[in-house]
Image (cartoon, rainbow, N blue to C red; front, side, top):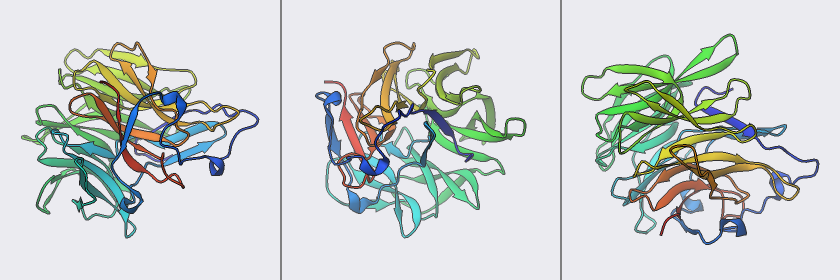
Length: 332
């Protein structure tokens, strides 16, 4: 099992099902997605990188940190591409054009997030099987700051709404269960003080209340991902999303603080394989809604700054299931 924020969920494979080689990725949408408008921002030439995903005996496991970021003005998207056998951050304007800017020149960047002022990018970098948190200016300059460098594994960094803190996941190996446990930490950008909170990974901070954090946890019995909210001031923990068959991950709180978009498994049927799709749920755990139904995987959901759209990585609209950055308009 990899150490970097993995989750799992059931695919419930029936006796007769499609194989992955028989999946038709070419359609842009499927009938279940109704009138949702999808916009594509990258193409095959961009060699966009998607997460590690593995299915085995009806169980799917996947790497959960977000692999795309959206600037606070909505004018740019950051994504990870694999070129020359190296994974780095690239930036593209959402207004169109094929021009991309490479912002990192590392070997293995794993995730990325924008600062609230749009001036910086924070990301996970893997060197010699160790994962640490680094920062670079979003628009210019080559200097990279090493923020969190330890012997432990750190991933999935995000900024607080005021930009003063970076929240991230640190994993620890549990010798009893032979699994990794994931814990929420923060880094103070002014004092460099690090603080540990409770168990959880893939943090998302509420734009309306920086003390409220959504995280993912793997159920200790099933291993399936569940979504919690944590109040860092009171210590209150609330389970808002859990299912006996569906695993969830990658929460992202909407700009108005009322909804969470997540990745979840979709169960297999006789005519389609089980896969990863995008769901929304209210912050109180009600009104779970599945947004995508395409047979290709849809992951890494991030809200647009106006809260009317969701950016994500998807395998739709290609011959071979190549990853691309997409946006779906979810509110009129």
